Figure 1: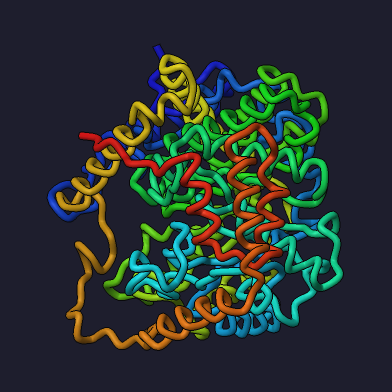
Figure 2: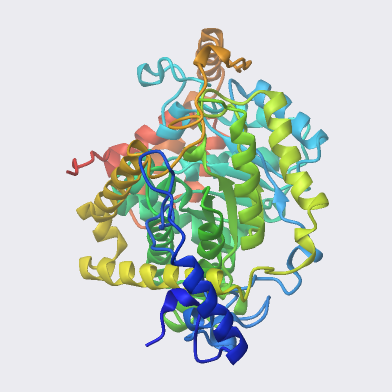
Amino acid sequence: MIDRASGLGPDSSPEYRALAEEWEADASKAAPRTGKGSGATDRTISDIPLQALYGPQDVADLDLTRDLGVPGEYPYTRGIHPTMYRSRLWTMRQFAGFGNARQTNERYHFLLAQGQMGLSVAFDMPTLMGYDSDSRHALGEVGRCGVAIDSIRDMETLFDGIDLGAITTSMTINGPAAIALAQYIVTAENKGIPRAALGGTLQADILKEYIAQKEWIFPPRPHVRIIVDMMEFCTREMPKWNTISVSGYHIREAGSTAAQELAFTLADGFAYVEVAMARGMDVDSFAPRLSFFFNSHIDFFEEIAKFRAARRIYARRMREVYGAKDPRSWQLRFHTQTAGCSATAQQPENNIVRVAFEAMAAALGGTQSLHTNSMDEVMALPTEKSVEIALRTQQVLAYETNVTNVVDPLGGSYYVEALTAEMERQVLEYFDRIAEFGGMVAAVEAGYPQREIADASYRYQRSIESGDRIIVGVNAFERPAEEQDLTLLKIGQEIERGQARAVQEVRANRDAAAVATTLAALKQACAGEANVMPALIDCVRAVCTEGEIVEAMVEVFGRYTETTQF
């Protein structure tokens, strides 16, 4: 019997075996860190047991051709492009939006001037929930967590002076995603840019809203229908557009483990694939434009393993389960954002360090685009200064560390390969449990992912409170709060009042008959089987507000009320 912790294995040379045995003897004498506050743990942040040393026996089942291959080839464990960042860096895409459309437009011009490569829109809570800024449900929230967009007039202001045909845009919105897409299309076409020329990504992943973020409007099944309508529409008319960004980010922010983030995110994505195929769409017609969005947490090696496992699982399932024949359909392309849940209000400057490590993990894991959080985001929307530091973090990583010159530099590491395989094993176990519910939509309706995430979040919080896991500045190395001195961006009430007046002026200065006609046509499309996108575009052209469009759809689909999970 070979002790796995010794690093011995059948492929080891006699010389290595002797060295490993000597190491094991010495290591067994060392006393581990113990006691409350020691920060000693032999498990990853996701509770995967860790050995002190990894060796050949830990990758005994690894088949180089089957499991690794080479970059740019199936199963894409090592990256989806042959030379990865040697040929093209990831897109540096800072998430931004606050106040009104004019203020956010100014921030976009600032970021582009600093070297940002693509835009990423953060919407405020009323917009995300489908309410206009003068709604009683919007009170106190307008412009606070993102930009307020009520109608095509706001969307036009948001992108004033920006060539939408020359830049890609990511929009983080889910419940009203189809409306935002319609607004973007009409904004571009009003500038003379055809929809076929538009490149970017719409998040639109409604299943993860029921699981984690809780920003829904309609019940799950009509929401999924609308998403597939968007997939079908964009497949026909917007070949450069990623219709959906299946999002694990918010699942992780809700407290999931890395394996849960990966399993539930991929299962959501496969659910959309299945519904689209059931409608009669050829998988290879839409799969190349699917994209994913992952969290890069603070456990450095676990995150790298997660990204590598994600590509392998996705490639195998798309080819073997869904019958995709186009290699582009096997390639998991993803955006990454550093972990908001790892940031702390205590000693916020420490967040700069955390973000740097998380960004490095995303790069070593092979991301296609990256957002780095600002140090002050745990307390408020970021200032220009903190956004600039976050962007400079990416630029230092890309241009000064030299990590971009070798593809998958940690490939072959005993530890990383073993962790990648363990991540894959746990994900496949979750797939089996989801199948027992009858698929992901049914599992979400039953509350299964929600319960799993809640349990994982509880375990993690307990590990912090016990001192088993150290968070610098929180449960160790604290300093008095009064020593902190940080300028925060604040959104005043005048923004809300001004936005409310603006949307009321829009309603007063439009063709009321066109509004009524297009809203009626939208309700008819929702009640039938027609694709809703053309009707939504007509509503936007008629200057219907988002709230009006949503209410028309609610009349057909209803509003969702969550069943409490314990």
